[in-house]
Length: 81
Image (cartoon, rainbow, N blue to C red; front, side, top):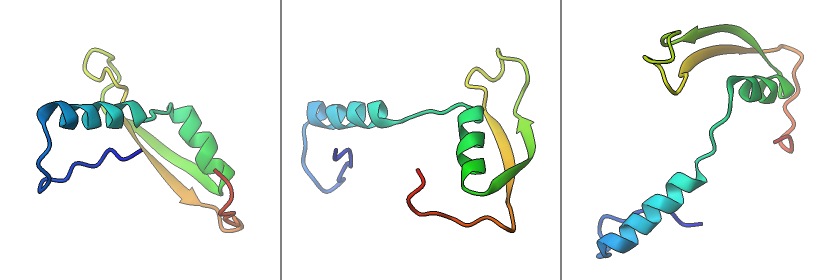
Protein backbone atom coordinates (compact mmCIF):
# COMPACT_ATOMS: atom_id res chain seq x y z
CA UNK A 1 0.00 0.00 0.00
CA UNK A 2 1.53 3.30 -1.10
CA UNK A 3 0.69 6.00 1.42
CA UNK A 4 3.49 8.40 0.51
CA UNK A 5 2.81 11.98 -0.41
CA UNK A 6 4.99 13.57 -3.07
CA UNK A 7 5.13 17.35 -2.64
CA UNK A 8 6.10 17.78 -6.31
CA UNK A 9 3.10 15.79 -7.50
CA UNK A 10 -0.04 17.74 -8.42
CA UNK A 11 -2.85 15.79 -6.73
CA UNK A 12 -6.27 16.86 -5.64
CA UNK A 13 -7.14 17.36 -1.99
CA UNK A 14 -9.49 14.36 -2.08
CA UNK A 15 -6.67 12.11 -3.38
CA UNK A 16 -4.27 13.48 -0.77
CA UNK A 17 -6.87 12.97 1.96
CA UNK A 18 -7.42 9.38 0.75
CA UNK A 19 -3.69 8.65 1.14
CA UNK A 20 -3.65 10.18 4.64
CA UNK A 21 -6.61 8.03 5.69
CA UNK A 22 -4.93 4.90 4.25
CA UNK A 23 -1.78 5.70 6.19
CA UNK A 24 -3.55 6.27 9.51
CA UNK A 25 -5.46 3.00 9.10
CA UNK A 26 -2.15 1.18 8.56
CA UNK A 27 -0.72 2.34 11.91
CA UNK A 28 -0.65 -0.52 14.40
CA UNK A 29 -0.49 0.42 18.04
CA UNK A 30 0.68 -2.14 20.57
CA UNK A 31 0.48 -2.35 24.32
CA UNK A 32 3.59 -2.21 26.46
CA UNK A 33 3.12 -5.91 27.26
CA UNK A 34 3.10 -6.75 23.55
CA UNK A 35 6.30 -4.73 23.03
CA UNK A 36 7.90 -6.39 26.05
CA UNK A 37 7.12 -9.88 24.76
CA UNK A 38 8.40 -9.01 21.28
CA UNK A 39 11.65 -7.53 22.55
CA UNK A 40 12.28 -10.34 25.03
CA UNK A 41 11.70 -12.91 22.28
CA UNK A 42 14.63 -11.44 20.31
CA UNK A 43 17.02 -11.21 23.24
CA UNK A 44 16.32 -7.99 25.14
CA UNK A 45 15.49 -7.55 28.81
CA UNK A 46 13.56 -4.69 30.38
CA UNK A 47 15.63 -2.45 32.65
CA UNK A 48 13.21 0.37 33.47
CA UNK A 49 9.92 1.97 32.47
CA UNK A 50 9.00 5.63 32.88
CA UNK A 51 5.41 6.83 32.48
CA UNK A 52 4.85 10.39 31.29
CA UNK A 53 2.05 10.85 33.79
CA UNK A 54 0.25 8.21 35.81
CA UNK A 55 -3.08 10.07 35.58
CA UNK A 56 -5.08 8.98 32.53
CA UNK A 57 -6.53 12.48 32.17
CA UNK A 58 -3.03 13.92 31.57
CA UNK A 59 -1.80 10.96 29.51
CA UNK A 60 -4.79 9.49 27.62
CA UNK A 61 -2.60 7.46 25.24
CA UNK A 62 -0.64 6.02 28.20
CA UNK A 63 2.68 7.06 26.65
CA UNK A 64 5.86 5.78 28.26
CA UNK A 65 9.58 5.27 27.80
CA UNK A 66 11.07 1.83 28.28
CA UNK A 67 14.76 1.03 28.50
CA UNK A 68 15.91 -2.37 27.30
CA UNK A 69 19.30 -4.06 27.24
CA UNK A 70 20.37 -6.80 24.87
CA UNK A 71 21.29 -10.01 26.66
CA UNK A 72 24.89 -11.10 26.01
CA UNK A 73 23.91 -14.63 24.98
CA UNK A 74 21.15 -13.48 22.63
CA UNK A 75 21.29 -14.67 19.06
CA UNK A 76 19.23 -12.56 16.72
CA UNK A 77 17.13 -14.57 14.27
CA UNK A 78 16.21 -12.40 11.27
CA UNK A 79 13.12 -14.55 10.67
CA UNK A 80 11.57 -13.75 14.06
CA UNK A 81 8.73 -11.25 13.74
